[in-house]
Amino acid sequence: MRTNMPTSLFRKSLLGLTVAAAMSAAHAQTAEVEVLHWWTSGGEARAANVLKELMEAEGYGWEDFAVAGGGGETAMTVLKSRAMSGNPPSAAQIKGPEIQEWGELGLLGSLEEVAMAEGWDDLLPAVVSDVMKHDGEYVAVPVNVHRVNWLWANPEVLDEAGVEMPTTLDELFAAGEAIREAGYIPLAHGGQAWQDATVFESVLLATGGTEFYQQALVELDEEALGSEQMVEALETFKRLRELMDEDMSGRDWNIATSMVINGDAGMQLMGDWAKGEFTAAGLTAGEDYLCAAAPGTQEAFTFNIDSLAMFRVEGEEQEAQHALARLVLEPTFQETFNLAKGSIPARPDLDMSEFDQCAQQSLEDFQRTAEAGGLVPSMAHGMAVRADVQGAIFDVVTNYFNSRDMAAEEAARRMVNAAQAAL
Ligand code: BGC
Image (tube, rainbow, N blue to C red):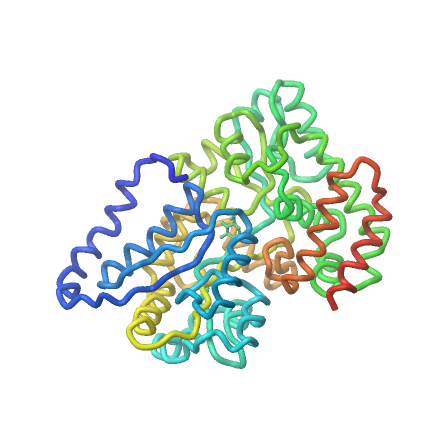
């Protein structure tokens, strides 16, 4: 699904490195890494390619194990069957609490040697490094920090409708109405469970605030899950359907983003991997497209950290795997990958001058909310709860969203059951 966007600039930045490494590649190792991920949209594939090129520049082989499907559910299913047959890849994009689950199975290898040599503990904020460790040892390496609670918009469509970027949910509904009257789809969306959950958690954050978000979607507090606040979040979420189009069922997230890019739709609520699509289309933030915190969530930052967990492998494959882990946290990769991916670097010490205004805002908001207590893990993106709980919550959210007659009270009751069933 790669786009035909000009990649010359992008390639040039890697060229120097490729040439420099050509000499060392003379003693080339043929050792390979096989890397499972789900980065298959235009922007995602450009980003993944950065890592492939860096590995190849060091003389290692790259076997791409890409499994399409936003949010990674299909990729995780495929990974499980590979791991069960005793043949896991060298590395896989595994995130959040799931890293612990794989660690408990004894399938992950230690990266302590690389982490010590590279000083990862000093490089990474504790909120990031804690997630990467199992039993006190690094078993995964973070590639970025995505923010999930974003709103994206096409400024020409907003202009046509005579509205500004909405900052509250009321403004969002009002802007949506005006956009529809101007002849456009107000909110581009793809009807897939993970996308529904992505929008839902931003609405819940806006209506309930970060403390409620934390209680309900992170701590799975039963009272919070079944509360009036939950009912309100669900009802507001469902009202958003009015701003979406009838053909949304099953649509991929990047197709929804392209509707904003093409000017068919005005806005999209989506994490900043959507920015990778705008970037791949050659568009400039603040001019050709707009970004802002999801309405009503300015004081919050829902984080989603992509990371590569390393499986227990030996010999040459382990050598290549350790090279991969080292490269991922080096400045070249962190900068080039994240420019393409839409996220910000996982290490906070890098020069951000090449990054656009959305990324600059993301970094500022990350730091500000970390201090003020508004930094929360994304439930929809596997950072908050275990995969089985997440799956159960997805079912409730998506069934409610698509049901003609399920009351929000009933959905809230099911939320409580979802959390209990998974205990
Ligand atoms: C991942 C992103 C990815 C997005 C869409 C998220 O869960 O963290 O890296 O771009 O899903 O597939």
